[in-house]
Amino acid sequence: MTSTGASRGRGGRLSNDAPAPASTFVELTWLERRIETWIRFGHHTSEKIIDRHRRVLGFPAGSVFGFVRWAANDFGTILSRIDIVRAVGADAPCQTVPFVRPGGDILLKIDGWPKVERVLQGIDAIEARHIDPADVSPDHWRHVHNRLIAGQEPRTYSIAQHHAFLLRRRAEP
Image (cartoon, rainbow, N blue to C red):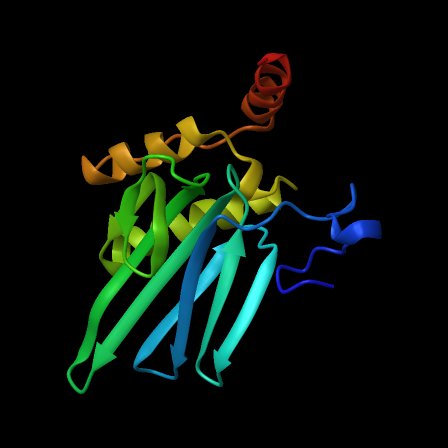
């Protein structure tokens, strides 16, 4: 097993069943009731534990993940944020996101607990339909971002919409 979790076949080459190598890395910190960052959904291919409070997860290019950040001080919450990001390939152009290296394609960026909570409820609703949020159409995440920023209700992601997206994705070259 390599540090990325990929198994190596003969000659040190990655085997066909090995996961894609990570190209985007997310640093997670957990200091109870002070700084709490976590991945809400997504499929990482590598993990490196730095110490008992920090670890780094690696995501392959093209994968989508939800990254939640929350921080507080003695007076209460000072940061609530969720970013839904598509990992980028090596040397690909990207947008910067704190604690995400090198960055990614930001599909949704929401600040403030009431709006973050709405996004988390939307993710729960998608999972209740037995859809992996990492497989949801990027257009849906952009729609949710735009509607919440405008103070409007986002549309529900339907199973029919998801099937149409999967068919469209299969038809792409």
